[in-house]
Length: 247
Image (cartoon, rainbow, N blue to C red):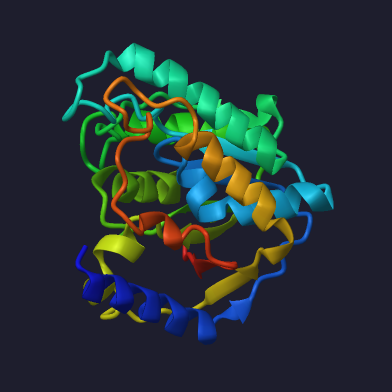
């Protein structure tokens, strides 16, 4: 992203935050949907840490283990990448206060989360719905339908279908802050919520470091892959933004 676009993204995010309503984190049971390990931390690390600190039951649902992250550079074996990224996920979750037994992996396939109407979609919806019925979340955080990354957008549709209005839904952006401000500002943003995470920024920073400062892959990049310069700035802000869902 060019420096001018980075500035536009930051201003756009600031503008949304300025008009956002406050979000009462509370102690409601929560599940955060992560298309890949690290999405839960980048988008919702503050919420997870605040919830855990308040004594809420917190869950992370990883739809994939991000096993294809090195397909275009060093071509690492998917099983090896998945094993490392699972370990990073568990470490980051623990730093945020999420117990190991509350981290769930669906193994849908990195780059292959089924989209609505495609083979495997109904089966994945049923699997996620069964998990929701078992853990009973009152709030579910998941990617916005225009998060500008195929797996994220597929995960959004899949989660909405599995929820069926049985829990409060809140959408987040990860790649959307980076790739999509010019498209995003054409939307009408009702119900934008802001969470002040200054009290737990140290926990979120440690969880981000669990991914970004862990021993790298043989190519020298983190196992989650190379992220654009400045990409993490949005995750390191003093607040997190979410969008009320109609799911």
